[in-house]
Length: 378
Image (cartoon, one colour):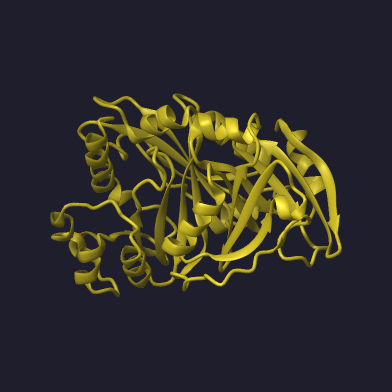
């Protein structure tokens, strides 16, 4: 059976040895086939604004990167400029997807050596990069699949993003949709690999397990998966790790692994202070969401108790609600954002809840299965 940790997260964080203090997510980098067009999509649909650029005009001959920002979220969209690059190989093998999860630290050199001595595979030795706005120290390690964590130390830098980038001036910057920060980031790993990566985050990066879900919690008539949620010392970084479980048909995790050709980041959960306004705007801009049956709402208030929101717009928009001992949350999931059924966004608003919507799993996964059936991959 799935179990919630017996201690409150705050107590766990206080007792844990935080040898890898993290200030938050610095940026998330996606390798995409056409970064210019992808940037227009994320601006138009999701309300990100132009921030920085690196490419031919800045002296970079091998790739182009467009940096977008909304509140505390920075997305970097990178495409190769030549054939035969590793970025191009990554896109050919996996489609558009997340390659780099960059973490903001006070000491990138220490972060690298603390994690490597505990077993992390080095990706980038500590290096200093400079321009007229100062210097940044960065380093990196490999995680599941080809995903990497970069450690970014920027206390001596005043530039727009990173050295080598210039400010991206654009006359087109649609209004933001209310995105605030990345609440959590979910990784899908292969069969029987979840505990391996839970151990990695615990031993190599000092994370603590918050919640565990098994196939009794996350299952339907046809499919199942298992998940454990890892969090860093101050709780600013949360990484649920999913693996497939035996079921009558192919689960969403198996589908992801097939189309992504291995482990990777499945979705970003993005926080908002008003999910009704955010989702209404996203729908108006053409973003499509998974839908649960209308019957989901018939006994919703009996299950979750009193909430501040009117049930009518929640039902109309397809927003899900769940409660834990700390409060409740509202959440909704987009359909895949790429041609392959891989990466998507979750939109989440927390009204005190620290959990991840366990009460919505069955309805949500049945909605995913309907999409899988339409794709012929269930």
